[in-house]
Amino acid sequence: MKEENEVLLLKGNEAIARAAIRCGCDGYFGYPITPQSEVLETLAELKPWETTGMVVLQAESEVASINMLYGGGGSGKRVMTSSSSPGVALMQEGISYMAGAEVPGLIVNVQRGGPGLGTIQPSQSDYNQATRGGGNGDYNVIVLAPASVQEMADFVDLAFELAFRYRNPAMILSDGVIGQMMEKVVLPPFKPRRTEEEIAKECPWAANGHGLKTRGPQVITSLELEPSKMEAKNLHLQHKYQEIRDKEVRYECQNIEDADYAIVAFGSAARISQKAMESARKQGLKVGLFRPITLWPFPEKQIRELSKKVKGILVVEINAGQMIFDVRCAVEGRTPVEHYGRLGGIVPDPDEIIEALRKLQ
Image (cartoon, rainbow, N blue to C red; front, side, top):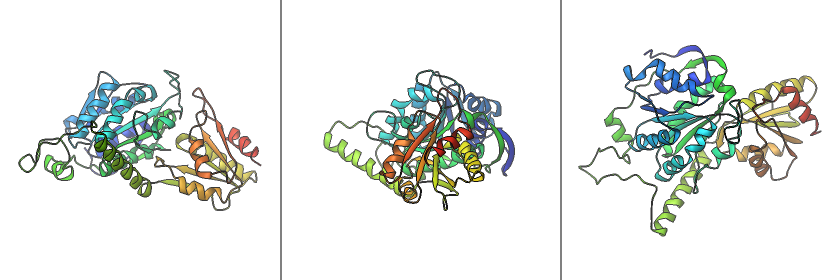
């Protein structure tokens, strides 16, 4: 295994797999589904169990894989899974359990169109599921939205860092465009997996058998039958979520300083919107781009400030309109907010976005 940075031409899914090995991932548990199957296929081809000891297992289902994640994360290991929209829907109970038990782990969702089995073509229609928790109870998942193959690789280590810093599940919310497209990627330097001693020191909460001479057994569960204790647990979680909102918001701005109008978009829609912004400016329309990188925590304050400077905001998504509700909530009626999106796996064209921008004038 090469320890230095390595530059390769990769699909987004391949970049995820290679970055997982290089960032010290202990285990991957997943089930193949289009358009993310290359994650598992790449790991199977690279055989990291022979070089780093990383476990790679094709589970019998998505339900099995998320519960394997629960067990691995509960022992303090860096573990991950990947799937696409219908598969991630099956994982929601397990993700809720992990959030309730404060178990870190990484879920990668390479979105495809729905509802139901839908299509194997790209979509961004899992935004609500990802940012609202998706399962039962009051909880949140940290959600990172890559807009390039490079970010697919970069966000693996970042997601693990955030998941363990806050003892919370983290998600990379990608889509079929980013997962299947190929770009040059600078892979991170190889970082060895943590030793059992390091895990015991960094994760004193983990149920891994360490430290039994100095304390009682660790019990990891989301269950609490006494209402007052369950309320205290929920209040603790809400305090943690507020800390994440205060410290971990990430976003990117382009040409916002002199913009009359702003596009708000994430992931592959942001890439297309960047081209639309560049073309619109050549046509004399002053347009800027605001790209949320963390979909949760959402950059609410930053969009609120943006709304004070522009004449209108266009939210571009590859769905029927989901992030737009968070944008409108942040804007609080200060400026018009409209939506443009395509459905069924159709990706919007930059010219379509420019036409939608002109309707804001």
